[in-house]
Image (cartoon, rainbow, N blue to C red; front, side, top):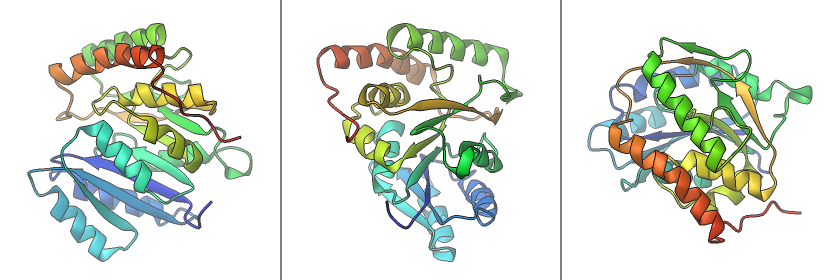
Length: 246
């Protein structure tokens, strides 16, 4: 493993309204974190001032860096960031910070302070989790999606879609090169690959605050739903050959 302990990977597409505040909140928490860290923001071809705002923060703190990418979808941005990150542990964080940064300590809250799993999922369904101000209809759509995930692709995981996940560097180096989907179903695919490769997966209860103005639309919801079946098809066609190193 390298000398850097934790990377926070933030995919961002047209996030100028909140990326600055999110970076400030992340940094305010991370300066209290007793291990080395970096924040990697992947700008997914934004047409607004997202990249410029990140560059301002990077100029003020060398532990923050910007990765520019052509627009390819959230899955593509996450893959790029996870593979360019340098930390022994790599944490995926949505740009809206709907999970408070201090919840990150829960992922390391095990014996010796080391995460209990190769892949830890921030879960809104685990015992002790809290959903705050989420509309009932949105919650039900999420549950229907998850029931389909469990029926078609991955059993035993109650919240595959939450945008906060921690990967070991080893798991990231195996899972993300094997990723094929670039839309919102990439989370299901990556967890499927991780389990197939033999990595341990667990859910961590978090506090999750609903914010309006997200990127989920009818079209992204539809493509995500179809993506569940694409994962199963890719598996049947032998397209996932990732394996955990012996």
